[in-house]
Length: 247
Image 1: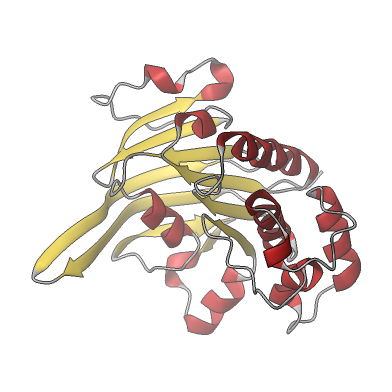
Image 2 (image 1 turned 90 degrees about the vertical axis):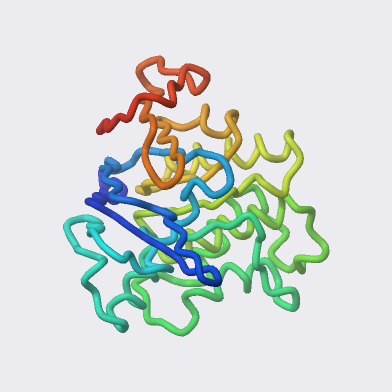
């Protein structure tokens, strides 16, 4: 059975300029994320969790260090190669970013419409909408869907290109707790159904608890790394310990 992508980051550093100040978002960070796992990147606002996802997804470029996905060094790719790489990654955000004038089906189809693919685009979009629990709502516009339903469309859209890596930045942040749990249930189910590695940036402990592994950041550094499949608990995190663990 095919599995999701392996992600290896080595010595990552990313800084930003704000006025005359230099802000270090990620500093000399290294980690390995094993194929097919579901990993939470946690920490308070400003800890670097979203920046780390953006670096892995090539939305931002690192100032130093390297990122390798399935043996391909992403940080050395040129512009056209980066565009091609981004099409192999699924992105889910806190804001759904659906096109309001397009139906649910057309929103799911949008990322692959300009490209040749080896599958029937419409058939796969329908299959994914069914997989996220929206079979029969293909013709609905985003404004006719609840927040949770819109996030389900966004997840289906993220999977349309058959990615082996799915990056989710605060995917439950705009949802009530019950709907958020349903989205987490869905992500777990999809990880088991499709060959995909999932990395979730979150500040919510209950989200992290549903993952296989929790990496906690503070000021751009890893301050703890817990294998939750071995009985580790998010509440047991000791901020003084810097860990690195492959799961």
